[in-house]
Length: 168
Image: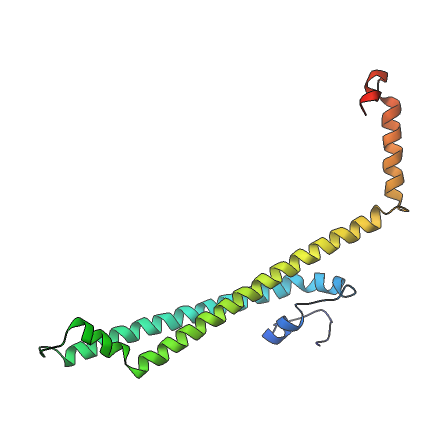
């Protein structure tokens, strides 16, 4: 497991994965590093989205280039139907490699989306834990706040007009 000191500088992917989970004792550090980790996960997701867009653009350009070359070679030949030309483009080894790269880029982008979603859940968990800690500290049975609230309630009861006391 990675050292649980507060992060400074760039956050590598492995560090994002290592710091996703945190213990109850590590909540304060996790809360302080959450914004940086969330932004790192968002940046990673954006990079993967750009990679996918580039792979898809490369694939589309390759399809057009191959189609133009095959059409030029088969110009005027008998039997060069649209289906034949499309099949020739589809059977190209270059195109298969480009399709594989585009599919891989899509899979990595989907994984990056899930990583970002996991950090959104982490943020929600930290928020709930912080709220619970605040309530536990300030409104516990032995806490001062409960006594203050009881005192305010009693003062309000004493200052209420007599006929409205029965409604409370």
